[in-house]
Image (cartoon, rainbow, N blue to C red):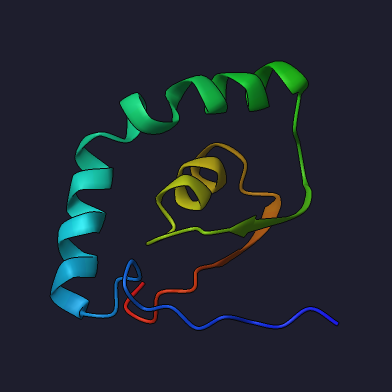
Length: 82
């Protein structure tokens, strides 16, 4: 039976750290996600339901939703501050 190992060492739980992460991700989003978004466009992703695990502040999900309003994305992250 799988068990969950709690580790908060790398998780971002402080809201100020999450805000800093979000600002950094926003400023560098094309560098971080540009090629991935190009692959999504090339695949012709239109509509549907998707799950993003380890979403951080949801920058990638927001970028996908901007270009594809018919897409439903559920984004989750282990860090409570995200």
